[in-house]
Image 1 (cartoon, rainbow over the protein chains, first blue to last red):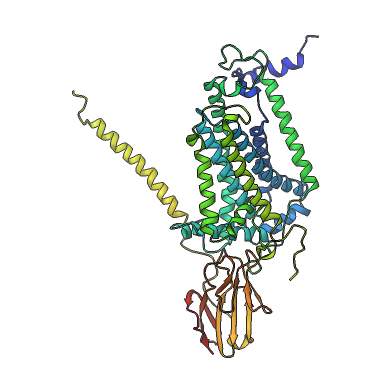
Image 2 (tube, helix red, strand yellow):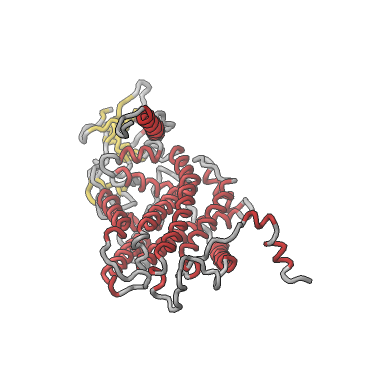
Length: 378
Length: 152
């Protein structure tokens, strides 16, 4: 029997060859991933899209029906609970991992020339992730969805000059009702996935281009193995595309299994149906905005929720253009970047600290409670 | 021909670009205006509640409308139940004689004035009058100053 008969049958026939016409060169970037956080984020994005599409076969964005659909997912639809949980946990995981990915890129200063634009794309993707999570949060139409959106829309209203108009167009009216749900659904289900899909593709392509342009400088400093002579990307000797694909597929499977395990063990939260007359005590925003709510409690929404977060976001956007350092790219915690790394770590600590305070140390009336202190009944 | 003459081709090119930008710009502007609804399918801001006789002395919460109807002998006033910080529904505490917001701990006295917490503005009083059929009409678009209650 000839060797490789199955392999030849699969890969040497006309159909395969017409689809895949010869692999582009494998660059160092593809082989020498650090944690592969970008790949993990892409895996989560795929899981979100697939589970999201499945959920769309049952979900209707009507205020009098949406909540009951979620209940159906939990108890009536086969595997409905698992897919709904997978969707929620993947979303939360993606927010965390996108943030970690950004931190990793910052600590290794991989936003330096010529990669500044890719950092900008990443920044936009981070915002899209948050907008997607926020719009998705409203769709179950339960108490935490309704009051979370109340807080967010009133924060928008405190933007100077355009605030009231902004709230009006986001809600499609003056109150959180059917128009708000329809608009959140549209943005969540179509606008964000479309924009994010395009931007992720651009982000990956741009990353690869930057790597090929910059040669081995950015990635090569910390590698012990010598870089090939002319690294224009054609390293076919030690790494084939099939290896890359197998490794990435294996990683995707691991992420999928972790998300599935979490979804089987832990149910996504759901409170009672939205009730405008009753504000829960305390009413807390989703965890990724709890830090913002903590800032809000210190005074007027304008400062805590508009000025500070937007200043931080703007600064983060301009990091590659503001920073004047020239050394330390591609290395973890390079000594020449001590100031930048300390500042960034301080910022991250404060941001996470605010979320922890909002989650564990705030009770009814947003008063301070130790985590073990019982809240008064009313 | 000299290269810096403004030719027919230049003119048509400019017209073409103008048409392109005009079209895209117009569509963008139209899309922007499109997003602001002209008709709202929401409950009206002016609505009727029960006749004044049905409201007891003191503070009554009308949950369907997020308002408080406050009666002192023959004086009736309607106070908004929406916290002026960021919009949670406040609760009336009989023991402590104040409105309390569960979200960030703003307190308001029985007139709606802020006594504690991050709220900046007092709870507004809505215009209230008596309809021909004897029921109270509340108008959320009419904010009345303090000390102006309805006499029934």
